[in-house]
Every structure is written in C-alpha cells, then in structure tokens.
Image 1: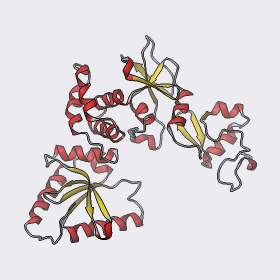
Image 2 (image 1 turned 45 degrees about the vertical axis):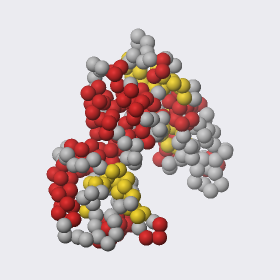
Image 3 (image 1 turned 90 degrees about the vertical axis):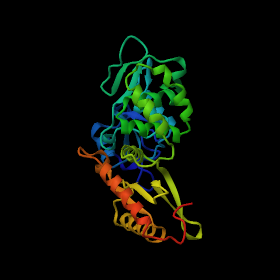
Image 4 (image 1 turned 180 degrees about the horizontal axis):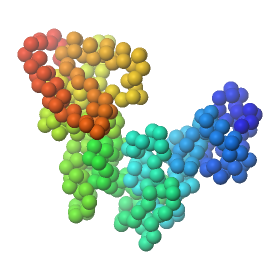
Length: 326
C-alpha cells in the first residue's frame, strides 16, 4: 500500500489511488489496476476498502446506495439471472440479510427463468417461474419486484424472519392490500399458509427485524394486539417511543440490540428512560435481547405473559396524575 494513495487527511483512499472511489470492483480488477495481492490485503485490514458482496469490494467512502449495490451485483450476476429473495430485499433497501451477514457475506440469491440453474461459487441460484410483472430493472440489473420479493420471503423464510421481511417492505412503501391481493396465485405453493397467517399481522412501524420477531412472540403469547412504536410524551415537547405496547394495561416490551444498547452511556440512558416511564407514567417495561428471541432455547412467552399480568395488577395499586400515552 502506497502512502500517496491516501487523501490529505491520511484516513481514506484519495484521488491518486488506482482504485475507483465510487464504484465496486473485484480483487482481479484491483490486480489489473496495479494493486498487488499483499497491497490489497493491507488496504482491507486498514479499513480503506470494504467488502460489499462475496468477492466484491468498494472504497470505504463509497456510498452504500442502490446504484452501488446494483453495480456490485452486476459484477457477479449472469445476464440471464434475476436477483431474488434476501438479496433482492437488500437491493430494495429492506434489511433482512441473515444475521451471519454481520461477519460473513451471504451468497447472492438469484433465480433463473431459463432451463439452466446459476452455478457460481458466490451465488445461490435456482429456477423459479416468474411473471413479467414480477421482474423490474434497477440500474440495468434484473431483480424481483418489491411485491414479488415480499411474497417469496413471506412464505419461504423462517416465520420470524418472514414477518420481518413483510414489515420491512410495508415500511418501504408496499401496501398490505397489494400483498393480500396477490396471495391467490400462490395456492398450493410451499409456505403459502404461513404467508396467509403473517400478512395480516405485518406492520411497517416496526423498526428492525428483531422488533418484528418480538412482536410475533407477543402474538404467540396471546396478548392483546400491540401498538408498535407507541409515543409517550414528556415535558417540553420531548417524547419516548416504546417498541411494543399495550396501552390499556400500560405494559411494554422492548428489544435491546447490540448496536445501540451495549456501552455504559447506552445502559445509563436506558435505565434513566425506563425509570422515568415506571415512576412518572406507570409503565411496566420488559426488556429482551437477541438470545431471548433467537437463541436455541428462546421462549420469551412466559416472560411476556407474566409481565403483562404484573402490569395489570399494578393498575389497581397506582393512580396516575397524567396519562401514560398520547
């Protein structure tokens, strides 16, 4: 790695770097541009290039937008293939990649409408019958439409991820009515029963796949229909939002993920926020983590049921001076 490849601050690749700063590339591309294998590995270790897909990279400062994602896929997807499933959702801006994708790039999921399957080490390819309206072109790349992608993920994924996918597409602007209106064409297809059950439960207000999973556990616990992201007003125009809430009982369940709830400052903020909700507004808030939702022995149903019962009992002992929610 040459020092003169860096920008003036020395923290990112600069204009003198042989690698493109706003477009994806492969290792072979880098070799062709004069970057040795050892030099490329040094760039990756230093965080100056990032992996976008299996075998595809970009400069660290390259924008993570639809155009770059489509260009990255274009380097590994054959012309006759259609990007599908989780990869299509990623391209459409819906976060439903496998949880292992935090450390290992997932295979690119594509389908073929021809007689041959896609056989590439970085691609997970199979055949699937698609209607013309199931496919759209995004920056020159053929991809299943948001509606078709939602329908496929809603019926083919594990039920907790399937609901998260449906929530994500509703959050991105797809209507529940559109999904319900297309269910009939999948009669007899694998997973269509799951899709019929989950679609009415989908809600675009969920902010993450884990919140969606927590909501499905809530339904499994046979609790009243929850309100996602319920706003609880504070003084001076500020407010808190509860991940899942049952306003009549003043019971809420929240998910604490690793990204925003692991530092000392995060924990202090969470503790202060929940103490205020309990002491000033009378809320009972139960907190769940990824192990509660996804671990091999995950079963949050007893905690949800017990917490809800405890909140209802508390109503008879506590007289609020102000309402618990707007």
